Length: 183
Image 1 (cartoon, rainbow, N blue to C red):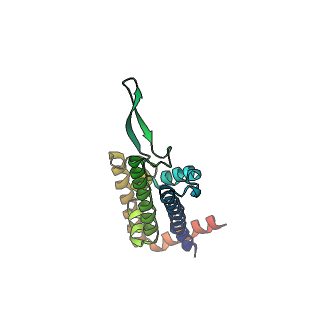
Image 2: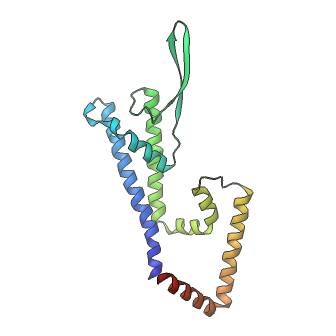
Image 3: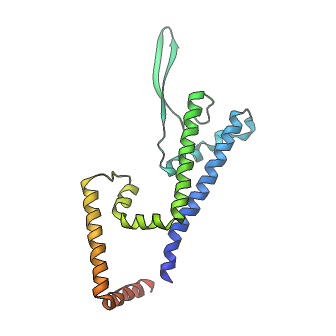
């Protein structure tokens, strides 16, 4: 029965991703209404929500290199932060904004699928150290990550072998630990 509580984790990811997908899709629709000339959508009020949803999806905030004339033969060269200038009806910024939103919507849809896919749960468990290091935002392609992964596999293999040879003892230990935790 206590193991059923573990199902709350994927349920949380499913609900979080579905809600984020819904909110971001509403902002996307409002942005298109604004681009069509319906100024009553008040899309500018949704900038902070858009920035949070894009960051929550893990999609990078793009910037566009821009050169504009200043007058008297002077040019200004700078980068424009796309999300800080949301909403914009400049064609280049509109294309990048739509691409970023579509990327984030894809991330949320993928997270929803992963939350209900048992193969994704197994993959997360098998590659747990790599998943944790990636979640922390660190590079997963380092020697330390691979070493931790090997240690994880060795520990899991040792536990599986011990479970085969000492099943009764391990079941007693696990029952004792669960009993202590539940009190």
